[in-house]
Image (cartoon, rainbow, N blue to C red):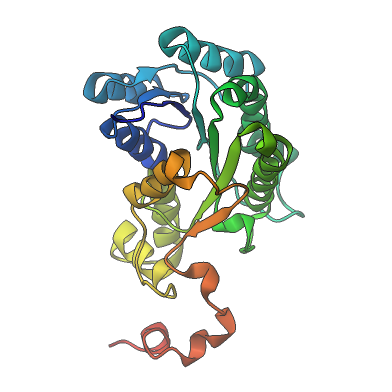
Length: 272
């Protein structure tokens, strides 16, 4: 008999969150989806039978509402996927305090509030938490200070849960994707294509930024969702506090060796 679980997925309106919700429902689990945009969540309700709870992940009352919605509908809570997040660029010298606050509120404070509301119920079910961070939590890129700091903080937050609640049976793990084809990434690629003068638009931008990766391509949302689904499941019963990179090998690569890679260097400097 399938082990039916009740899982909250934040930021489920598109990208990795949507792919995760679809995967969990296909596996027979009950899923409560949240996000700021109402229509994508209602679409998931219609198409896969998820329960939509539109809300702002950074709001204290919304976190309580989200957990209560799951409990009222299904009587229990077995998992939380912390996927909601926003991106803002900038160096420490030029970013605005308002942008900093917005990123931290969504990417760090929101997950903390939801975890605070969910932990008592996850203890009862010996449940699981999975946070969607980023390779930016592990490696810093140019003009990316607020996003990188927020994702590193999210990683540490979930490891704190792993340490503090592991004996109560709660597991908390983190996935760190590299470039994945999502709406947020598409917007960044559109901007990069304009800045770099790439004629091929988004497709050319993805090709350019993923060229150095060992796998040489952008990731797809379902590839990250599969990892999340495994971490939520009992199959990962002894995985706690882990950081799994889903990055096409990006963090395995020594950037100082890129000049020696004949697959990359000629393309970067020659018109083939």
